[in-house]
Image 1 (cartoon, rainbow, N blue to C red):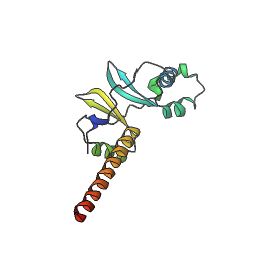
Image 2 (tube, helix red, strand yellow):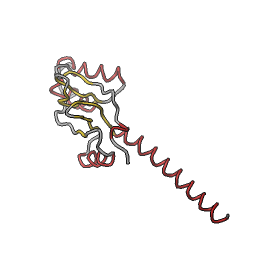
Image 3 (cartoon, helix red, strand yellow):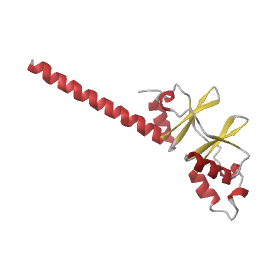
Length: 146
């Protein structure tokens, strides 16, 4: 199987830790994404998702512009290194029941992988493996008839 670096998204959209829930929602909408990596001094300190917004902002009586990001983000994020095997990343996501993994190289954010990235990779791998099996089976028929 391949490595995380082969399927990770390199251009990770981040947001500074001192922003508000409204700024999170606006940025997610502008970029058409469902999560943001929260950074402080350029280093990842958390993750915020659409689910966080829905659950943690809509249950308050405050305006989203009054809710600090620190109240809705999750400081507990999981991560892997770029050279981690995709199989290990899948296992980590399954074991921890998570949808996203940050990719850190020497503590620096270099990418992110999501369930969607993994599904896309596995789908293409299955299609390629299936095509190779078909070719191998066809070659066997030709050789045995020859």
